[in-house]
Image 1: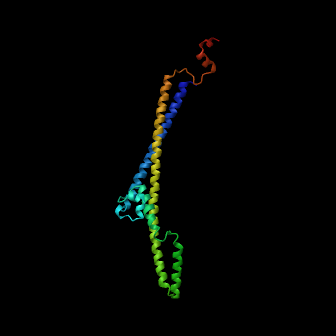
Image 2: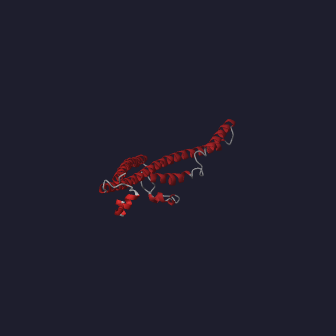
Image 3: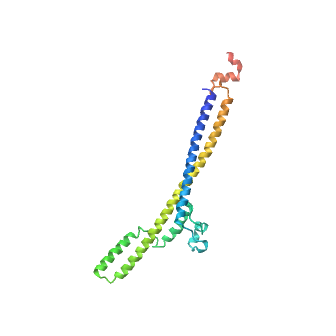
Length: 218
């Protein structure tokens, strides 16, 4: 095979691969922009704002992100993660001594059964049982709302992370495509500077003749 032919083949292949990477970069950029704008639009509609720095409690002030975003409207994935974990997460832990909505399911059912039994038996303990049931029901409703909002915000954060990863992939694709294009152009330039008769891998005799032209007549 001639050296020029090989250079052209590699160069054309490089241009093709660069084109594919360029297309990938454009697609990933489009996806990243969509994720970013979608998350911003959806979070903006929730109309959630961080507490001003002056109103943060001692526990809340321990969170670097709550201090950083204090007073701002929640519109980004990072802000959603902060609000979900450091604000909602902090407060739901104080509702029922760290228990979750699911954890309170069995105690609520047990109290409900006791209230029914006490009502049927006209048990004097009925008022106290009803009070306990009311309290745990309120706690469970609060936890349900808090955990639901926290989950939705973290979902938005996760979606924004995919957008960020897409943007990173696009950047790498554009850089590699540019390098391949430059190398391919350099290969083409080298190909057309190389005489068409030059082989890619000369035989040992040809190489020896180039070193010692007197061997050519042997």
